[in-house]
Image (cartoon, rainbow, N blue to C red; front, side):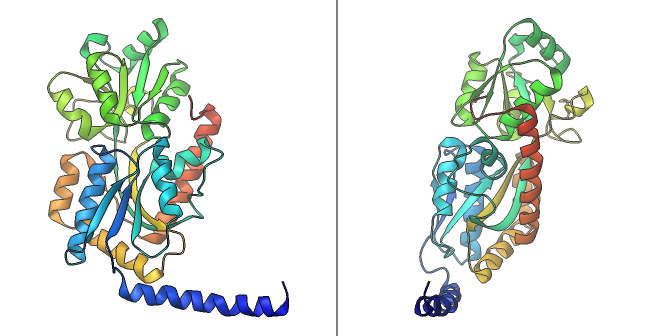
Length: 324
């Protein structure tokens, strides 16, 4: 690089920063796109649509569009946001899969969860249950493990890299019994197969199995977390049954592309934080077995590093791959 080129580059950096700050002053000046990297009707989609409405109300009715870009365990939508302009008009509802698991499962991943995103807000989390049809036989984890030793069993999840995928792998490691992991593109299809007997068992979120458990169509063998869910108090935790390692929970967090102007990032974080204090939001989350978390950009950045390290160690130890 010659002197003239270096001088031009040096002058360009402050100009670029000034341009970003100027755009921040007029944000938002067109519809905001909230990318949900999973299909419509999934738990991530439901959370995303609630958040989109909250952003719109906080911005005096500004248009916020939910864009379902499903596929490849959430990586398609995540990559789209990572490669979008950092102007605050394209946001991502990320998950444990997109930002803590897939980077370890997919060596050729086109984005880096720490480098290519601006962390905005740690939103909420949900427990997962292992459920079976009553006809399968087991009524607790000990009986399920005994059956798995006697004959092959299939366990469905809502996709590669999801919390369900992690729990399946950890279950195999903790019990020493292998079951066949069947990843679906979304949980709704897996639920259909769990109910009709195509699948023997399934890991899924509280909000999507509660009605079936209460109707007697499914039996909850165990639930993640330190304590039982108040929505399903009859289902024991995995820890109660001697399997504390089965503890991966689904979580949701908001991200923008890398280098999002700080004023926009902070404004969005403030909107999300305020929304979690609303009684209506809390009631909606609790009704669906979702726990509000809360945490701005710095808290989310720390959480992300911890989750990447935690699940990376599990994945390496268990030898989990995108196909396992």
